[in-house]
Structures are given as C-alpha cells and as structure tokens.
Image (tube, rainbow, N blue to C red):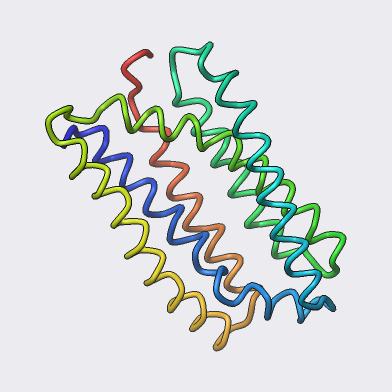
Length: 183
C-alpha cells in the first residue's frame, strides 16, 4: 500500500473513532436535552439530507480542482467544530444547527476523501486496499461504540464530546501531512 494511503488510513481512523463514539447512544443524548424519538430521527435526517445533497454538489465542484487535500482539511475542520458544538448543545434547535454543521463537513470531505484514496491505490490490489478502508471503518467504529458508551456512562456526554473533539483534532493534524499527487 502506498505510504500516502497508510497515512490517510491513520487520519481516517481518528475520525471514525471520534464520530462513531456517539452513534449507538445518540438517542440517549437527545433525550437528555429534552428531545424524543422524533427529535432524534429529525436530527439524523437533517445531517443525512444536508450531507447527501451537498456531496453531489461538492463532487462536481471538486472535479474542477487538481488537489483534494484542502477539501479534506476543511471538511474535517467543520466536522471537528461540530463535535465541539455538541458540547454546547442544550436544546433541540441547537442540536439541529450542529447537525447542519456536521453535514457541511461531510459534504466537503466525502468526495475529496474518496478521490484522494483512489489516486494512490495499486491498480492490481484495488479490492484488498478498499477492503482495508472498509474493514478499518467497521472495526474502529465497533471499538468506538464501546469506548463512547463507557465514557458517557462514567463521565457524561460533555466529557465524551471533548474526547471526540480531541481525537478529531489529531486526525486533522495528520490530514495536514497528506501529500496530494497534484499539489
């Protein structure tokens, strides 16, 4: 595997770890800030719709640029800020705003992230190198679910959000070290 994809997967691991810590306990957090099942579903829908529509737009825009690195950095910066934003959320409207911010980060990073990784694939080992990406996501997300639940249970959601933010900042720092073929 190319050294840039190894560095990329390290960076990606920190973002998967930070983001997946909240996933399985998200509805509990929503309930703690006064929401219900509909609020949890609506917040998730906001994130998914903003991300989905934005990814289509950003993919077309990013095709016009040679380098993906800056989009990766900006997308993950928005993601990190959204994780920090969770720390300050105290009601459903604030949660919806954080979900929009998280969606913006996702829409910026996804096309660039996928394009960057693809550029460095060994064409004779594409299946195994995509498998490395996907298996890493599942394994790290599984670990994150346990760690996130433990942290939230023992220390509360505020501590969990700061851990998520801290881990994402490590990933963001690693992202600045990526070298795009087109830079």
